[in-house]
Image (cartoon, rainbow, N blue to C red; front, side):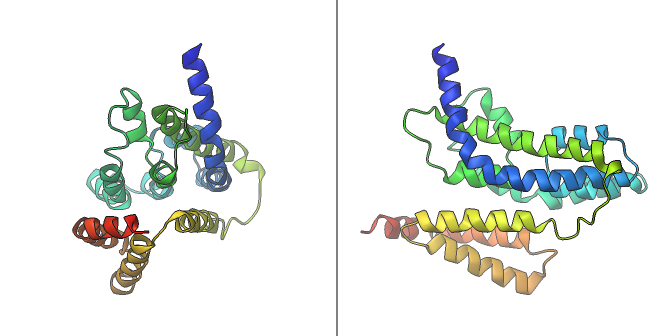
Length: 236
């Protein structure tokens, strides 16, 4: 009974954090399912891919890969390039996920951009189990994407509308997450550094290739400047 109550409290605490993700994931999941349907794939393709891959951008690109010629090495390289940022997410979450037992394996699998943003920054309420809170944030986000993709695949052949521009939903969602984090920070050194490095890498490498250089630069700079930033954050 105690375990059930603990899980219930964690689910209740995690759900409000995932509401913005629900809006974004359902819109994009529906678009992805419809895209798969009009590309000639049955509904079970987006259903299984959203359940097992759980990587939005990679799943969209996978449609082109499935329609093209068999090229496993190219597919592997593309997957690594698209998902390389998750290596940095994993490093950042090592301490938070330490000691969580079997939940850690699912948390590693489900560490998408949005789940990372929540689990990295959210303050777990007092009396709520940390492991179950992270677990339900991850599970809810996974279910949002899975259900949206599956429904999109099922009803794709029945709907006729232009989905151009729907990707802005995710941009808007990340903007809200960033502003919320900005509001909670006492000092904005890390956020300003992230904005500056992103802008510099964008201008140098272009929109298609700036993510990995940005992550590498931020990893080096934040590692080198960690102590000065931490001291400034502790200042009144």
